[in-house]
Length: 117
Image (cartoon, rainbow, N blue to C red):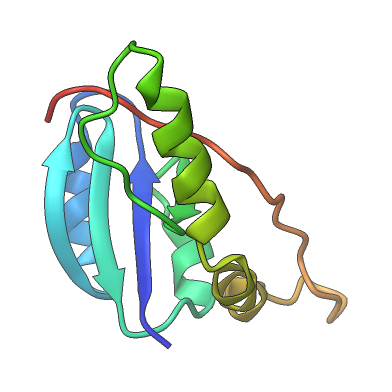
């Protein structure tokens, strides 16, 4: 199962994050503090990225959201139509074992990011 994800990092090191990600998959876009990429799977390598602060699996992308009233409805529709089951399956496959053989916990986060790129 392919993983579409965003790695977030400190400002200015996006190219370093992208170089690390290229060992796992294909970098699709660099933005301010973000590297958007695809990986053949969401295996444990995604959680072992050393240069990224966060790695977020993408469940939906909504372009052109502004500050107008219609923006909330667009976001609601996107959330309603997102395949949460597939995103959670990818998250489970990314979990790694800790030193005692127990699955490492990775928090589930819902977030929205906006801005030019």
